[in-house]
Length: 122
Image (spheres, rainbow, N blue to C red):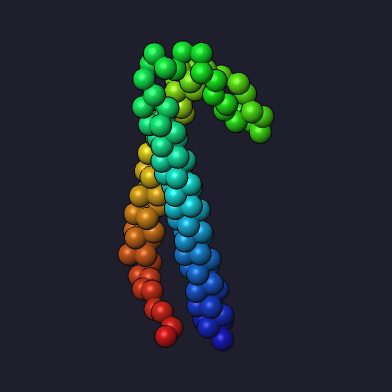
């Protein structure tokens, strides 16, 4: 009887570890998706503003949402801010992508070391 209980305990522990891996991977995938969307949105705005000839930008107002408040800036200031934000978001995206790859590899190794095979009910 105790061996059955021990096997059940081990099974539950493995299931919990697997679920933790899956939750971490899903969270990282969501972060990666969000960061990718933000980079794309910033790039669209940057492209649009940069397409304005420099001589036409002088004196033009542009509004940027910072912390929930609209701030009045010049077009050139906003372009500089956007470029800085794109660089930062790209760096964050690369870090999240690396963490995602590391987690996936960790899951694969964990599955191999624990002889875990995924069986899906149909």
